[in-house]
Image (cartoon, rainbow, N blue to C red; front, top):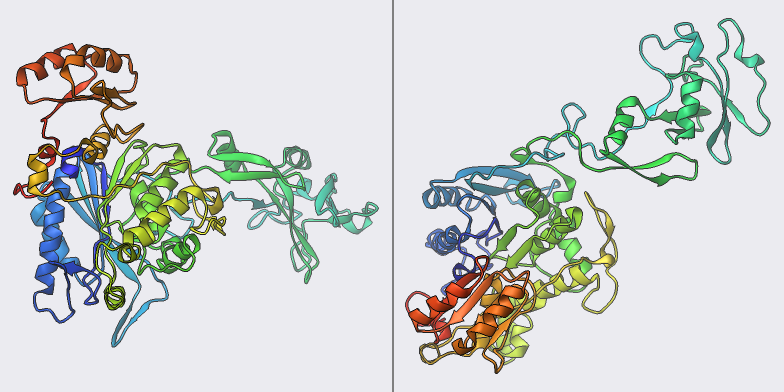
Length: 561
């Protein structure tokens, strides 16, 4: 169906297909595949090939990416299949640590990772980001999410009082308010610091090492006063064991980051120091092929996060929300209007990740999810025992789409659980905010049906193709779900003309629209179709629908639409 609406229009496909582990987690020809099936791998490859061939028709050949996650059971077969189907693509494999504690595999090594294949098409390439997703140390690290407050007391060479006498001076600290109340003057070399009187209610702090050796500060008292007034110096932690206060300040490198807007000033703390936020505009580096981040934990940010959204509802092995978000960000950071597709939608993590990306940069990325409403093997047995069959409401409510995918999308957008309660907890990493805030997003749910040959050949009802026309026109604005008596209608993104005798009014209406881009013209008469096309503004794309609407969307084989 999507080849009719999005052929060569998809910017990114992210899929998490069945891993074919031997458990009853996927079907072939409507039967669950057993672990001892001798043709298990062949069936899995056949299932994947059909879908990947279709994916090739949907991806933009000039600039797009296909991301496929997998574990060790089928990784090598999948790699060969991808190379066979996409010889024009540049393909890389990434290792992602999803469970640092490891999953026991009997007599085997504990498994901590899974894999993702990235297939780049056309000019597509990974963007440089602030996190390589691997490096941990400061050396070469691009992920500088925190602002560095440096210690005011000098260390290393020239750090003794005798080395820099003009930098040996007292600070008078209010231990109750935990602030630097006053900054003294340098004490000439040879003068005993113990002769300097204390201030009433204040504690005198000198640059002293833990052993009592006199050191010096890094800045002059004049400059420190300026920093303190600007909120760029503050009192640090108190070491009760050694009766020692640390003093912190912002070095020139950090101040430059503030001036360049890499670091934003959010306000001031109670002690007058600046509240700062790193806004991800620093060094950029290409992410690496091994990812090791706590936020990629499938348990904590997959299963547990899903239980927070849908209390009491379970779904096996959901992806970490932040792992999917990171994978998409690598290719969509500079594509705020990208279209993302996931045709193994599962719990809906991909759409959730796209919402997060949109919130972070104000993007209007769209995500299309495709899923069946399949009921698990164990659940099927229970429902059949109860006398239910596929299609019964009591059966369908337990299907993956109705039970997990739709409720999750609703919960994420509204910030409410299915019971109507605010979702507890916060989103973390990159953009931290309460889950109960939800997202400024829209979602529409459609059910794909198969129409019999008789219905297809006898002018199917217009409402059956209405969502397809809306999708083809960009999935925005109102859906024209019925043709009014006048024989035409124009919505925000497109118009539909059925009564060609009313073409003049239709052309005037769609020309007056500032947002419409497609005109669907329903006719079997080629001459009249061309006449209407000639009158349309150049910015409007005319598309012809034959009067038997459903034949326009007939699947190969002619048996259904």
